[in-house]
Length: 363
Image 1 (cartoon, rainbow, N blue to C red):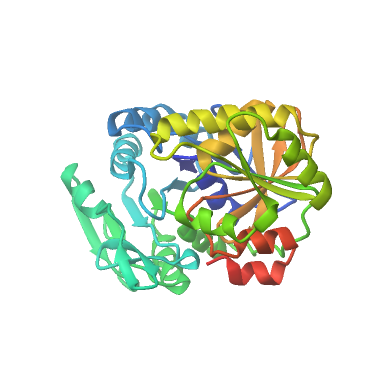
Image 2 (image 1 turned 120 degrees about the horizontal axis):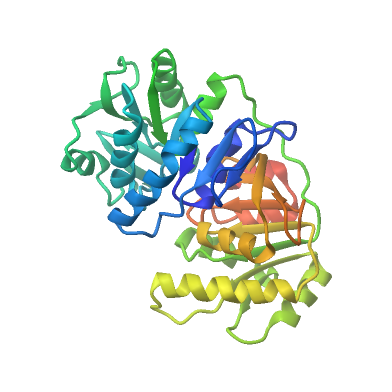
């Protein structure tokens, strides 16, 4: 599996993971392991040209070393350079079939009429990226298809509005040889169901829980707003003692950085990474580390000297559970999610340790 950011690699790998057989997720090249592996190309924020070069450098060795299921994870909102990366991988692998199904119904992301979209309060609305048009612009002949149809040769884009729709696409495609699957965690879960993987029941998280939030997505801001005093807005200087005191008092602290309005995203990412790295040196090791934002999580892992993350399952769809391998916090439980995932009560339910409530707060 190849993803363009770390949280994406984790949330799709979770469908195939169990505590007994975790999926290794790496961002430092290919791990010297057997079994299922996912790699982060760190190309979400790159230009199309640089993203194409990044995946072209990783893909041949990845699928030669791990020749089973070939899965390219794409963002369910189609952020990043999806068309450029898919085109690059097709040139390398030359599969007979490329099945593109980006829907993630559990998070309200569905494909309709050849466009990926989001179920919002005002109804379905397409995301800005028209992936079919972009792929055709790159010279590919893309067939638009719906569940129940046969898998055509070449590249096909599949409408899907439910998990049953994705199951139907997988059922049609599993009999085909030499296939590249392209999708979000929704398609990954459908492939895992077809292979006999079952969802693991969520278990309590080790306390205390330290949450470090780098995403500025509106869904993430709404979740932080529901936390009240459990949310700490860390200034650019100082504030570490308040976080440490809150963590000791409440056994939970979610932290975001107080950034200047309108700051370019690349600069914001650098400041967030540096500020959280500094914070980690001032805190004792918690029981669980929560992180939101792929760049944020990767920066935290690098600051702690981690070698990889072993995914063991998921709390709810889109919120994987992992174990950090290597570094200062080796073995710590890691919970991660995209900033765009989840309803406004998700973090509140996570902090309360309420598995039943989490299921309702996930969408």
